[in-house]
Length: 208
Image (cartoon, rainbow, N blue to C red; front, side, top):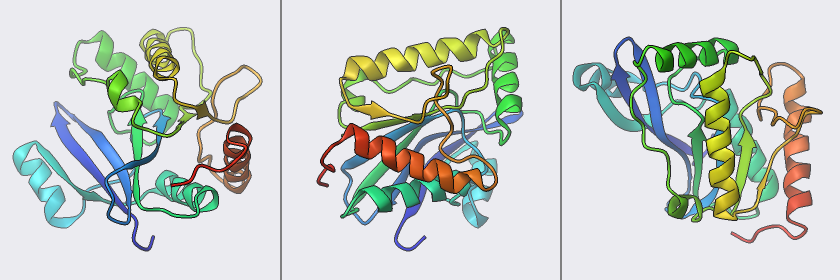
């Protein structure tokens, strides 16, 4: 994807791989261009020697592969920003890797109930206030038994609102936020919806 790199920290905990501290680096600046809050890490992986270091040491931070969701976010950034030099930060409701959303939520619930989900400190208010905007895209899946999942959404919404940083996303009829990168031909439609939501939120584009 040109000069864009994905950087993340991977950790082995029990039988699962967790990915935290993820961002897309455009150019060389360290400043935040924005933030995205999604469900959980998907298919992005460490490559070659970096992957070996993860399994040798149990934790490793390095450049990682750019998955389909990241590609969609890169396209979004290119369509909404005239200049790209900085970082798009990627947060998740939970950080265990799993590509299918329902399976991911079920795994998260199991890990929470069994006490196997590790302590991962969420970003604080100051960190969130460093972002010019926040995109919400954790998906529209719902199930009565997903108690911990709903609790995470509530915590994140409270943090986002308290930060007073402008936020947006594509809402369903039930007021849930669609994931930014659906499978199939809807991907292009969702991209345009996100661009429209961004432009509606910011009548004049953010100058970065």
